Amino acid sequence: MSTEHLTQILAGTTEKLSRHESLKELFHQHRDGDPLPSGAALKEIIELARSILFPGFYGKSTVNNTTLKYHIGVNIERMHHLLTEQVLAGLCFMDAEGVGQGIPLYRRPQAEETAAKLVSRLPEIRSVLATDVEAAYNGDPAAESWGEIISCYPVIKALVNYRIAHELVKLGVPLIPRIITEMAHSETGIDIHPAAEIGHHFTIDHGTGVVIGATCIIGNNVKLYQGVTLGAKSFPLDDNGNPIKGIPRHPILEDDVIVYSNATILGRVTIGKGCVVGANIWVTEDMEPMSKKVKK
Image 1 (cartoon, helix red, strand yellow):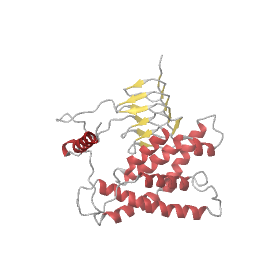
Image 2 (cartoon, helix red, strand yellow):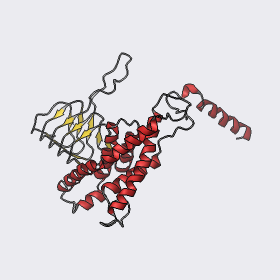
Image 3 (cartoon, one colour):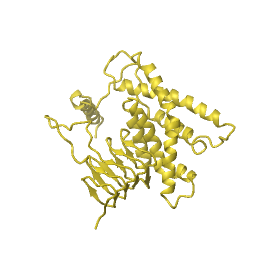
Image 4 (tube, helix red, strand yellow):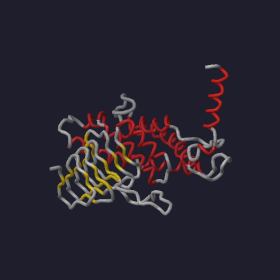
């Protein structure tokens, strides 16, 4: 291939890829002064959160009773700083106002306050995560200690991300929560939408391949196994044939439900308190409390 012909191929391809008609909704035009969400920064935020929530298991292993308060304080300050910038990036990324004018001045105080509110909720997040650790330990005879659960089990890593992301959803932060839960998805194979509502003492055994949709409501003391899907059965369409967004379309699991491996529960159905869903089962209708559905 001649140099001239190669140049023509590269230039022609560049021209095609730069055409605006081929970039509809695929191109984010950067505005001077506006930050973009940073995967590296969000990863550090999660690492800091894990070290704050489970000191000694994550972060500096030299932490002890004497240095605990110091380490937590330093990590909280760093986390608040990083989170402020990422919340700001999320707000600006989704902000249609002030195009070409840089960061709207009112956004930074909003981002700082939102980050502070998230940090202030870390004690409550730790409390509910402790119940998740307890559920994982009590539900697995192979587990020898809480420390093993915290250090090794993918469900705890995924739930740290989810519970932080869920608080950010409740605080009205766009984009960032989804990035955080997708980081856990990549790390653990557990896909939990940050808008899902999940109670205390929740656990997922093994975890790989679990999917929990955005409008799921999961009660307390619920246990899932690997490969479980809590998904949507169908998508109602608007007059233009597009899916209607924001409507409840995923299952409700009441307290004390167990769903075994590779079961699929679809649609806005209610799985009543104490139900057991067996492995490799499709469920598309409500289940009465204390009932079982197994493959015969």
